Length: 237
Image (cartoon, rainbow, N blue to C red; front, side):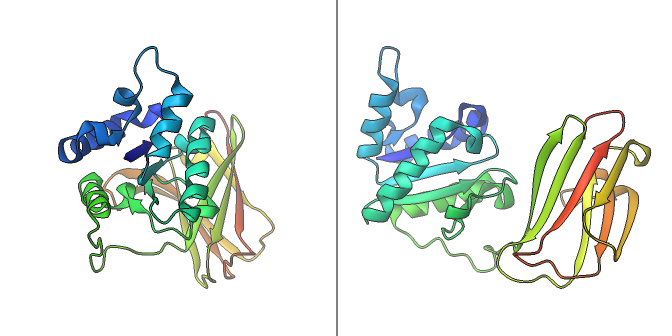
């Protein structure tokens, strides 16, 4: 059984993958709630049945799914099960620019966000078929991570951290839809820094946006992150 663990908010991304898998492996071999749980069925019972038969557990990781308590129960239980049962494979699928849970950092994930759905689905199929998914030059480790926390309607706190090793060059752009006069920012606890506001920056994906420039005269390490307070003056950040 192939189990698709996801939140309903992400269905527009998940359903085409589920349908493609059903054509290859058969619908009865795919646990996807839209067809695996029907009116009158006990939801918990059906999920437990699917998980008990599961050999490949695909956890679609996104900002939405990480907020879902039901999805959390699914993936944490199955992660524990896979650590005890070598016949069960637990495969994270990254859908957006979410921060991966720390416990999953040791697991190689399939990257829809970075590589696109077609490449990701090919890897997923290879995993189920037992084929080697390696393609030279595709997988890369991202040491710098950014985490946003909402403090209030008009304030965000950004933490820039190194995951595994020191990053000696601390030069960053914070992309924003706000104009220069609409947002203020403060780098917490730093004195040796350079800042600026650049307009109409073209991102790597092609869209045009504004950006706050930060240049910090120190390394970023796993135990010494950079923290930035962002406040919008008259609209949401």
